[in-house]
Image (cartoon, rainbow, N blue to C red; front, side, top):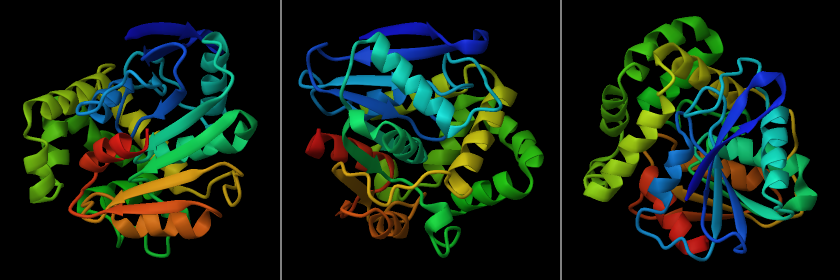
Length: 282
């Protein structure tokens, strides 16, 4: 595993984690909201990694990547392309978890000639879902709505949680199903879950909160790209008991994206679906 900083225009830096053999099939990992490159540690907690090369980039404001308030999907695509060229990766696949799935779709649309496969796990479909807030947990729905209607107030409210990664972890875990909470009690999984949130908030409460709101706005507003027919295999995984982003979002994505295939995992929630999807498909 290697972690390094990549300079970008405007004096900012990206923090990148590169795991697995250099000659293995490459996957770029797009983390959730909130999240970080260390979210990969959750995906791989119960899985072998020798057969793939996983490259995870902290989006601006998370982990070690410089904050960028004006960040857009085009910037994310450019960041992925830059890192791929630096690592001499010509073709790659994309794995997007939760809100990161929308960033994966945007990147796949812009760079489809370089993309082999796309896997979306627990991804919200807010702008294409008839009742997005109805089909989400209370914490999730309220946060999505506030990001669009009262973003500054939400930043202030979120800073209470993002100022303490333990409080943030507790808030997220309390929003999960009893079964998924029990699943995350395994020491290796709980450690990876906490490491991800520590990294996600390491730049401080306000930067983390601002980054979360920025990303939710990008995810929840009308998407400035079309994924109707990407021409590459698109696999969608969603837990039937996802208490944060309900299965209806995965179903909406499948109906929206031509040729996509949905696998609904019984007895699975949000984070455990990431682990199981990785194990099944990569």
